Length: 158
Image (cartoon, rainbow, N blue to C red; front, top):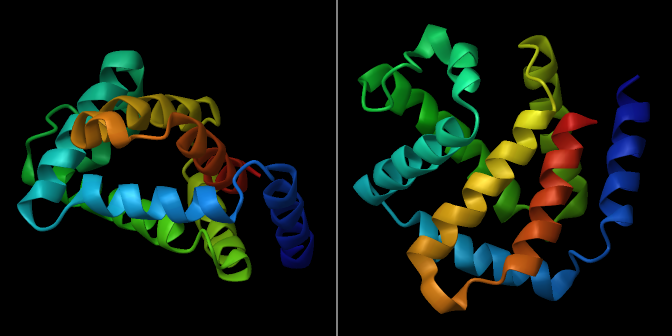
């Protein structure tokens, strides 16, 4: 079963060929600038979750166990950092397809076991398209981000 999942993920990566080597490196570089360090990451996370919940208020229900009703609570901030750490790993692995695929299989299992509907990956993608350019300004490459985030999202949804 794991081999089949890995094959499906590999196909998803191949289908998303628009996220080529240059785009992957650009997204990695832009992510590093946008995500920042230390408390900047907490602020980034708060902005991202506010954007997610503004688009899909009912998504808060998925985060009741971690205090999703208050994005400033310590429980939710801790959850936010776990999610963003996973996204950080995936973006860091964009140029290491085999390891990225293994990480996506792992994240898929976590999301399936928590019954996270696949439409919320689109919501997160849209939120990223708001928050990342707010950090970067004119340097943001929407096409690269759209294509490369699709690789990550499709891999987790698979």
